[in-house]
Image (cartoon, rainbow, N blue to C red; front, side, top):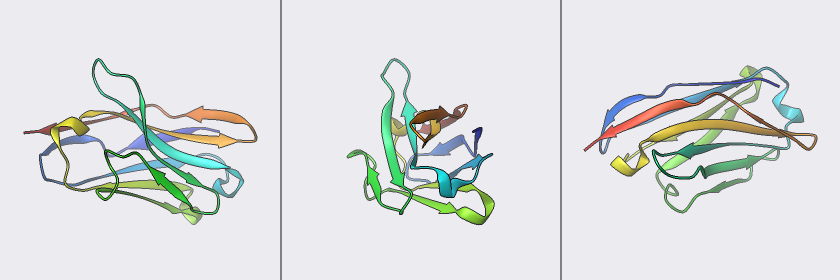
Length: 114
């Protein structure tokens, strides 16, 4: 399984951004997909995890601002990020759990200017 994340960039505080993660495999076989992030000098944290059935669990710091979605036909997962804050600045990674194995994509940098 290969995961390709894209969509990062520079955005002003209060703005929005959409990240995409395209998977090489059939997403219907993925047990869990999601996004994590790592800010400079901090540990990686979970942003959101979505189950095969579509149940999503968000990190406390992003709930009500971020929304995960999937286009199964395109094998792509999205992360809609609204009301961005400076503390959202981080490298964002997509991940997938498939048959007990964890896969991570390369990161995409999101920088929120205040």
